[in-house]
Image (cartoon, rainbow, N blue to C red; front, side, top):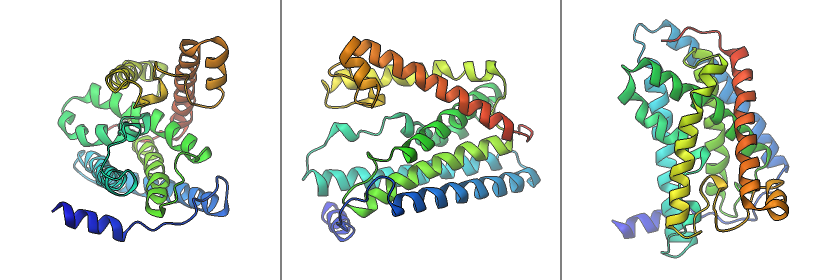
Length: 262
């Protein structure tokens, strides 16, 4: 089985110079992807409004989670067998902010009868999914690889995050108020706590949520803050901006959120 997988991975290891940030490829892919995501999200939200079963929304989101999981499985296998020669690189462990929609979309059907918690999860997916998708496409250096399928995977992943966010917003699955946003912050704190455990357990080999205590935060701007005022200040400023960005996305999504909660 492993030989079959390795052979399949080798056949898809299409190597070329990595695309440059803000190149024609990056811009066309991003703009086209965002337009397609918005159109699909709106169309499916209108279709779901005509369905008699409220679970149609959850099926769409679960399908998104399944697509993300299959793509992540391919990425992890490709990195392990092709890029790193049978050595696992914890740097690519799938527990970043942009990885959370994969897990949450797969878990959502388990909470189909728990309206309050489902609304909190959907609000988190809407706000922080939109933030992660937009920011990654706006600053794509970590997504552009010399292997084309890895590049397409990275860009498409964040387009799907934007679709998930807009679909939730158009469908009225999320909360609109400041209280609704505040209820997502304990979930964010939980994920940051898990990320910290992973970072410590791997002794700095992983940098989940970019809050490793072993070296200055790697994100631009916040790296400079960490160098000047200490890593705790850099991480604190980063998390504060993360929350502020989530709030801005919450307000933006609130303008679009005209559907009724199902």
